[in-house]
Length: 314
Image 1 (cartoon, rainbow, N blue to C red):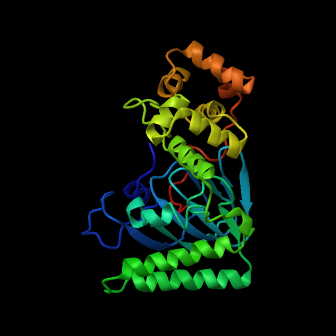
Image 2: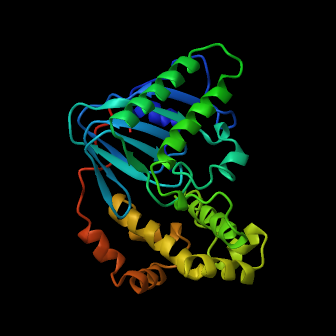
């Protein structure tokens, strides 16, 4: 299950400064905190909220297939579709972070002008290292956010969104402009919608639910396009078939479960929609040349585990 905002507050032992307010996923929500965490870690997981963090302190950021050493001031963007874990290296950790939910984000911005920015992209850079000038600019934006958050201005949500845009575009300006096309063609757009739908199938809320969409036809039906049109667009854009992308994502999720959870192989198989352990094992071996059992046995417990310190604000 993805970590929720109330669970996040409980984990970092920090509470909403408005204790009388009840958090609701149906209402827009935005908050901002100073980043203060002891030497420790945050477990590998999904979150159901967005987060933009100014990191001042040394640590390691873990993704599914790689890790990054953060050894100087950096801006980190995280969204509900990309799981990660954090391990503090230096005892002193400073900075600030803002968190907000899906309702705070304007749909037209998410699917339009901001679609290919670090906050919403499924791939690409999520960590942006800052020089002294950029660090001062980012710190100033967070200070203005904090000031606005404490104001009584009726339109402060719109102002906070503007400051959020400034943080996003600070990162965009640090990237090759060609990586952020504002007007993708039809095939690109269909591919983006497919990839987003694919990502939203995970993590699987097992045992209450199992993976529902399995085939290209399933995804085409959800996207209201003909399966041949979907296949053509994806092949044209990515060079891979729809089936290859689906299988690759299922394998990636299975590997995460094998390496980072205590779920049994049978639970993993059934949660990902396989009717038998045998079928799952054949599928996994076909795509990785390894058996699920071998991957589970070879998993080296990182210092990022389910029992790590909870007093951290990443």
